[in-house]
Length: 534
Image (cartoon, one colour):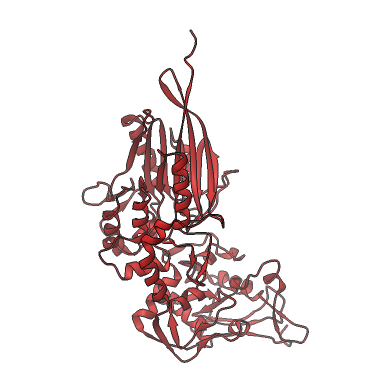
């Protein structure tokens, strides 16, 4: 008996993730156009709809926070829908998954966002503590195509949110382990729905190297995507995010995608089905990233839909939010890094006040930074805080602090004329001025006339020597706390607190609440050239 001729059908799934409120293709720091933003991504989405009218369109979380526009919306919260939600409504998204940053503005804002959405929000592992029911929308959706192919999409969010978020923003919510949640719901979906394709959209990333399986990251359960690929039975496609990586691959037979961030790419997964004897089976899967580039023109409907709040945001960026008494300007980045400077002292104070600790380390992130003039605008803040860093509190030993200071002291060298200069390793092949840290809460001298690794010649805390086996809680930016910039002494150290709000927002809030800030420096540290103490 001969088999009936096979029929083929392709299901396309498009995914965005970590848009972070970027709608226009605009760099809010410089006002220049960039290859980013949901308006450009929308052009790619509409193009794909013409090719595949029945495609599925999913957002994987961290949609409503992260840009000046989204920050401005939260401050001005009114009757209008969040502009990012308005765009997703316009583009007819099938569903969105809650990201950790969806909680940054509190539950009132989040409830309004979900209420204004014409699509469901998915998160199987976030439940109402009282009812133990899903706190937001549905755990999953099922889409049946015209030929009978059934696709189930389960949404889940990293359960690490309570480690970062303000407790007031998650009152009454429970966060179940994402991996165990996916295992349980996948089993239930397979039994109840019997889908032809099982997709998990997970706002979380990979904890292991995709090629080798070697552990990566902090060793916490924040990211569990690799384990999902290895341990979840019947999983066909895994959409990921949170890490802002550009990934399109296959892990243990599971097709995976992670479409970068800020609307720089759209993830596309194409699944081919073959029908034999009345039953659809998967015959092929493919993942690819559709990149936003200079050839992609922003979608006019999206631009028009959000033009009002975009214009308001740009005007707001140039409004005064505070003033400085004294001088917080930077005339020379080298001199700023040579001894405690009022601008650096201010950053460290914001970090310490936010984290509730007595020790802090920070960097001058932009080598072209001018600090603050007498009048501060929001655009000034974004120019100075050019990286989306959050804060982490580490518990460090006195020995860790010595090693960190030795690492930072390697930034300098003594020039031929006896003056202070920058180690060429921080200039070529890549500028790394941001890897020089300046501390508050300790008193120290760095003698850069001495060999690298032997430059800390004074170190105390409140007038007492910092002992190698004593422990201190120190607030740092998240990049540095993870060991970025060759600060290996920080890797694996106990994480006491993670403050998952961009530093630019923390500084803006600090200034807005006070109105006036005062330029002051502690003069508790300095870089010296003492040729006699070598």
